[in-house]
Image (cartoon, rainbow, N blue to C red; front, side, top):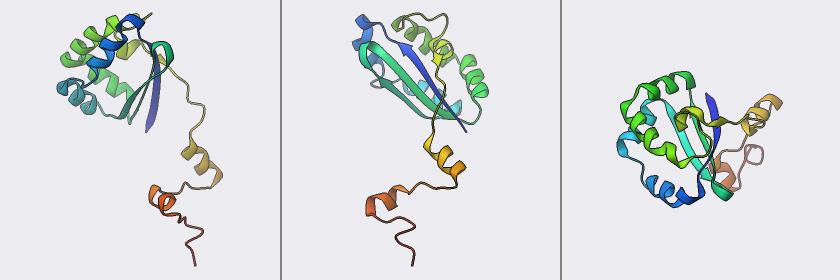
Length: 132
């Protein structure tokens, strides 16, 4: 699995409209994102219109190719392009990619450790304290 994060800058004067366009996103666009193989797709809004996006995929090149060929995605991206500063091309293809520098599960696995499951951490049990 590949984790992808990206950054875009929303034009301040269009921020409210941008947010309205994502509440909700067109159902056919949601279906195309899923069909492309992107999962856990999330957008975060920071100060001054900084937008951070994140998704997971098994094959990002295939996902990009799928969305590049999608008429629905082309229409969505054409409508979204005016919201961003400094883009040359479609927002989904021209966003600044971010470099991953830390991932907890990867480092725990490399160190031979493990992460407690959500159920264990909520109940106060972990594999060491519940072992007899």
